Length: 253
Ligand code: XBP
Image (cartoon, rainbow, N blue to C red; front, side, top):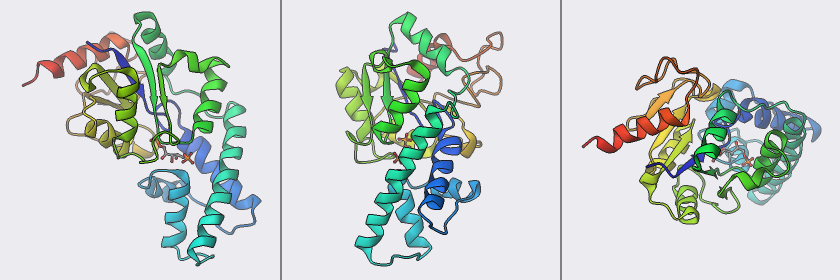
């Protein structure tokens, strides 16, 4: 029995890494007169590091860029990250990061079936707020029974902390929830907490495979291309399909 769907944010609800964070980082570099620009290719590599500030610090260290003093470097990373989040809010608020196909419909399925919704992310809360306020309205938070962000879960994915906090808030056993994720760190975080996971591949993780996922596919907005196969008569991945995948995995030895 599924009692809750736990949503990752970046890459799963929307292509925010490509259309939001990457663009905002480059805008912040430019606005602060810094000579750095990240290509999609480089950003795809950097996504191995969870957390925007941590990602930036990692890049500064690996490029041996100025400033070299650790404290100054951290202060600059903090400044760029703060501005990046402001610029991200502007992009998202302007509607430049639409929800991915099938997301809204699945949220509605859950609402009708009284399956509780959770947000499980290690991105900053302000980023989650602007995305969901833009697409679900001012009262977006009332749709979610649990919202766990970086502020609550400083141990970023692939650590299981964010999932464990969500399960605790919802008073659920791991197998009563299903996680939706798009990236290796998120899949690992859900699995480390024992939560069955469905992978909706995103731009930067277009070939992601995962042993042990309930299902892997290109988008919630289409039934084609999923493994295990989804009901081919359906136009999208609905809650009914997720329940079937979940039930099948529960029966497996
Ligand atoms: C997403 C991330 C974040 C965002 C940037 O984590 O890795 O770092 O790229 O967000 P999750 P911040 O998969 O848990 O959603 O700049 O706010 O860190």
